[in-house]
Length: 540
Image (cartoon, rainbow, N blue to C red; front, side, top):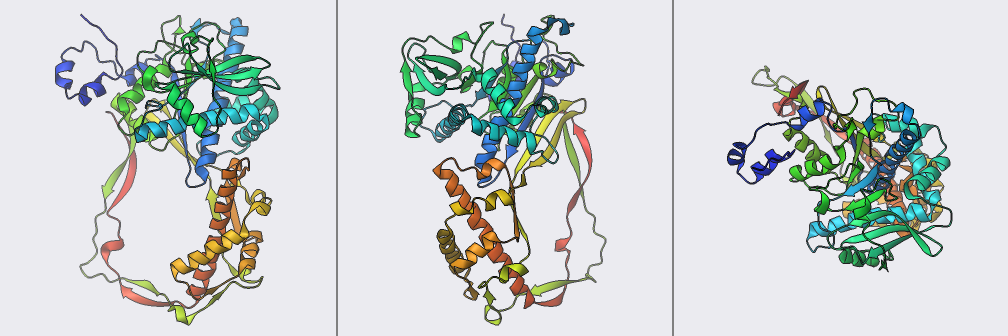
């Protein structure tokens, strides 16, 4: 007889088209919603940021920074918990927190998904190299997380937001470097392939002749990852003496606080340390695997070792009995929530109702139609200094959307917000880096593509546009950072986009001056066919 507890039994059986046969062997169906409702396992809070265009890179940095800050809060609370045993009145067992960054593909493979997964892991490694080699950049990123408050959903859990508000950004970044990575001034980040541990790469800090390891990459093909890293100018050395770092994660006292890897340890990994989970790349059809990985991070020894969390935890315990989950890819949120709904968690939806039309057969209404002028009837001149004064102010956005979710008594509660601030002044301070001649050529090409032969401008027009007060740029501060050549490319793309918007605004304004208007018979095509009425709870 084989008795197994599985949180993903239903999805696996359905995938194999054998649910009826397997269901006959089920003794007790204890879905995740009941498991969570009975206070078993950790609570969870998860967030995803989403940006478009040139905001994607900044969003990725901010997501990783926020995940790092949240993990640091857990680590700080754990140390406070251990140093003050008198606050543990409920005999709650907690484990040393571990920041886990996971994907679902095998690193180093040849399929497209594997290549994308490899690029995600390399992006994380570049982020770690950046903040450990240039601590001032971490201070800048932390400052953004602290100071840029989203409207609506927050990228930090409320308890983490409270913990990071007091120290200065520099002090907080120094604490993070010391507590999470064991960093000391003068340390240099290194990546070393462990020859004595198959599939492992050590993440370390070189201190004199010794290496202090703070993390490990555990993947299917470490040599393939090494080759991919070298192609992106990340140096990888060999370590012939250090034994498996992954095998030491279960030690009561461990310096390994960061684990990066693929699905090879998503199943059957018996460890209570995972506390903060950052998912690198997930597809829409990975529901059961997502839940398996989710199960790794919500495991909790809990009260008297029975696996239960407290309903009303203390300030120090709340971060330790909550799993912080961050997603780096847009498909992550939908796939993650679908997997929770499939495990019994109720979802909140809006009810869609059909619109009933009681208008007569022949519409008695008229609508106004705009008739654009012929191009020969008007000319748009952007020469001189005065043209920009009459342009409608444009707003260019590099902001990020923030989505958060948590389980409440009524099901999954989701919130949406926007993260960003006015960056116009900071952008204008960097205009000396902008290639104005290159932008002028782009505008000439735009004029040709649109066929606007009645539009006239010169290179000076570009300067006047960029130095004008007729635009606002909103976004994340890190979206304007200049640390590498690719940052200059993004800065110039942003400048070109702003100039394009101003040119288009000036052209449309002049075109509208010569437009004519006429009444036409209205029809029913403009009437919506449905509307959303009220929010309802749906139990899967």
